[in-house]
Length: 313
Image (cartoon, rainbow, N blue to C red; front, side, top):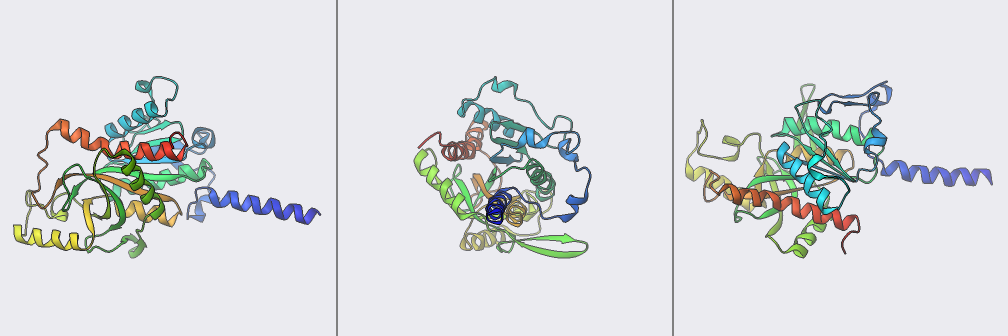
């Protein structure tokens, strides 16, 4: 009977291992210590399983202030004990990113653009791995420029695409280009869309999100310090993007989708459109209107989290 018992234990163990957050780097297994430099955390200096082992949702966004506000909002919505105004920035030892833990939710800033978010993601995925976290969903909350959408519309990303509308991310490694798929989890996207229909607070669509390398020329803006194209050429490009299913433009989604996919993590991108790029380039809405727009992805993701936790039907 012993072999049968061992086999059952082995299957249970294998299932457990499959659910753990995985990294795709065998070098980490040979390191005595892993220093997560930009988080001011480490495997020897901190008990990561004790600190983060219960995390189920890692929510990331560009702005440090916005992610602190999101953490405080989640604290209130989950009705957790303590004063939400006194939540602590776990990364206060560095000025690169901020990180707040609120029950099973991490709220982390990632700065602007692919390089900044990719550094954060490397260390976040390693953190979740070292902490032995299981069944974690990663969600990027952000702002974007809409294409053919009214300002304030929330876009749940179907595929993150590049400048040529391809669902791929190109990473240069040792002088060679590595191409990775940027398809996101369809089930999570559909859950988020269902949550939006239950809220009925603001328009929400599923569409492709184009990721660019900058805010101005890369997004076809006419108002940067440099511009080498006409208004007509800009509109032609935006029309091509729209016809390819693109509904918004931002600067982080491709690397976010690619890294999560490689590591087997379920992930979603939820961004609000601050303007319709067919109508102009500059963001002219009032401060109060923009603040309310920026809260919309937070409200939607909060509803998703509460449903996943069984706090609402």
